[in-house]
Length: 532
Image 1 (cartoon, helix red, strand yellow):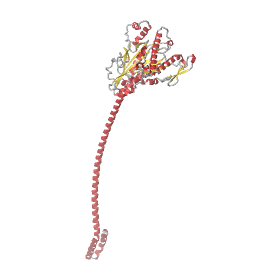
Image 2 (image 1 turned 120 degrees about the vertical axis):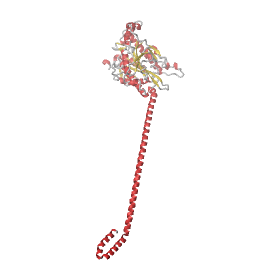
Image 3 (image 1 turned 180 degrees about the vertical axis):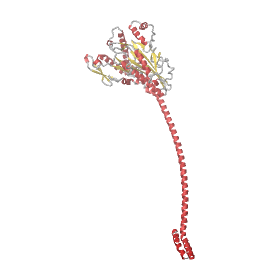
Image 4 (image 1 turned 135 degrees about the horizontal axis):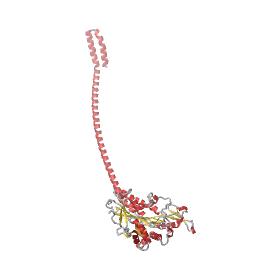
């Protein structure tokens, strides 16, 4: 169902197809399908939308000029998609991309071994407040003395294109000039003179002019635009909120708080380009564009000849110029130079009408073969807006036919230097590990030598003990052998001694008489037994 219970005129059929229900009498109710790179339904989350555009952050750090645009009718969700709610509870594409940029910078600087930089403070604001600077590319930014050690810089500028006029959203007196500017543009004659008279002496912001830079980049610059140097995602969010609050809005028949201007946030990223031996400076730029409502003049409810009528016509003229640029790019990308045809005259190098509006003039560096662009088209499912939704689908189909030049991946540029530092770090770690292992090996060798020395000493002691034991045993064995030999000699001599004892006893008996012989006989027998 669409808004307020009306039948849905637009449906998300799949991840790549949108269905549009025809409302014309001749084909009412017929479902027409349109294919896109990615389709998100009504239940899609901000994080899901961001994942589709997240690679843009890498492209910017690669030095590319990129653009993210939100296109759709008033009330379809463009500002919510790009900015998110005012309380910041669910950030949109713009703050998420800035947070991703600071995260990538932080990782790049960590890989390069630099502690200073915006990436080091990506999770919180720096101690000093954001600095503002009016001017073009190459101007020195305030605060550069205190942040000179930083290897990457990020600046933000914000402007709105209102009635094809550029207005700085970050200029200190910009908010005071808003009502006076609109009042002056409603009057005939010089609107700026009328605004100055209405303000009564309040200093006017400088006139903003588009000018091609004379630097090597050759990019289109907004001369006089305030550029704010930010050092963290939190600082960037504060700057975005300040610029968003100064945007021109007005009540229309479509929406009570309709944006009547195109709001363009410009993020410039500058850092070291160490992909070459010179290690120069790389500059990337990101345009974040919240386009004004794309409804027709009649649908806006503007009164003929009134201020809203002039606003609506200016909006439609700039959107028509954007469509013309997209058509020319699509035609150029679908054509190839014929054999022998000069490049300058080939269809790929045909004229692109950038100068037909301030919007396309400003975005031409991103809407070109070397740029990178993402178009987010927001649709209302309500049948009451069916014809406007169909116009948006046709616009998106135009953009889908564009094939810009092959994008250089940021990973390749950053990793040439970052990978070298990572490899050097890995090599130093390997060297430290090798040295540690060598020390451990030397200690192990010392311990092994000491063990061998201790073992040698113990072996000598054991050998000495064994030698002593052998000598003792040999002495004991010799003694035993001598004792045995003496015993054998005693045994061998025993009969002779027995005869001598008997003879001596007989002689004694003879001398002593018969009575003395009897006691001597047992002793003789005992002696004989002992020597047997």
